[in-house]
Picture 1 (cartoon, rainbow, N blue to C red):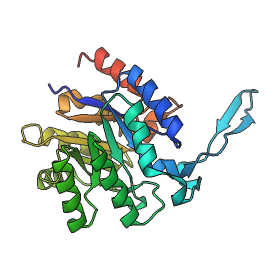
Picture 2: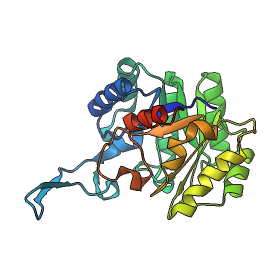
Picture 3: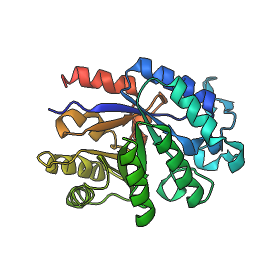
Length: 264
């Protein structure tokens, strides 16, 4: 049975919030923190409070894709990264997710790659390099990461859910693109969710480290059962909202509790 590491992916949209959320994630049992640097360009709106039929207070915040954004120049990249280095004791996965892969980065691809280069040079523990990055540019970042002793997550993001065989073949074909191969697809039904589980089972005896997950109802199955699916890294969240599982996400405390309950 594998002993996967738990990475808490932060939802914060300011440097201070990143530091606060990282501290809480550390206390909650995270092994690794993922800083979503692209989220720093989002402006989180105030929640709208309404009253339900029985007088209860209902809070609503629109999805992040509808939030306003900051100007690119408003974020000092070097200063922000230095703050993270000084204030976060856990290993960090540094991610700047582009819109094409479900992220929020507002600048150009050249600007995004420059931020990734700056993070690698700063001595960050891990960097997420999407497989969608242009080949020559990605090779340059891989070389820089190797020179800096920075480990690489090679991530692929799909708005659909391939078959289990296709996912397993994808992971095998990408094994030289990073230290851990990550795949995240969109779950539309429970049959989709099973593809992640089956792909993990197909890869159990392979000499490749992987992290497979889905977004949508049932996407949390592979996270909850990661230890018996030979997953290397499991992504969790500090969110604790109603019906979180319908997004395919799992709270880090709930994940740890589930593993204890299931004797993982």
